[in-house]
Image (cartoon, rainbow, N blue to C red; front, side, top):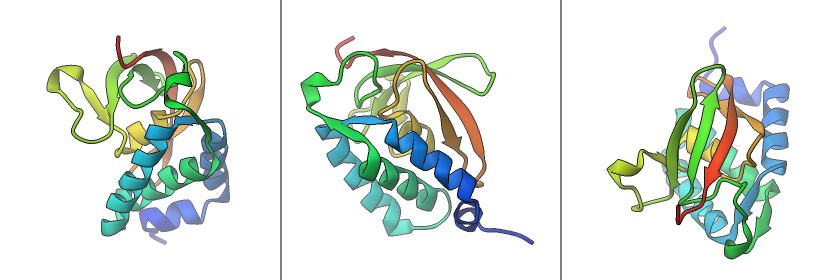
Length: 152
């Protein structure tokens, strides 16, 4: 039997529970929270495939993540504008700057929060691992190794 990506996640209560647990451990700034609403609306307009999964993941973070004032996020949480160092599964570490909309500069090696990777990383704490949702509905693991603030 073949499943669509949305059915694969919806039919997998363990995978859905893992995403919920990840969302509960996330911390968002007020600015990031407002931006997530825009990302969800944009993804919902198309509403199929990876964008439907993205809307679901961001929606869970919107519902369950703790919210802090913008200046109080600290240096150990991935927020919009911060440079993150992360590793997927057992692959070598990579880095990039999380961005929401038009903030991307090519030299920043940007990671759009409106992507499955960016949506997973936003709000994560350094030293934690989270489920990295793939476009086919499967999960991989991402480990947040470091964060440099937006001014770094």
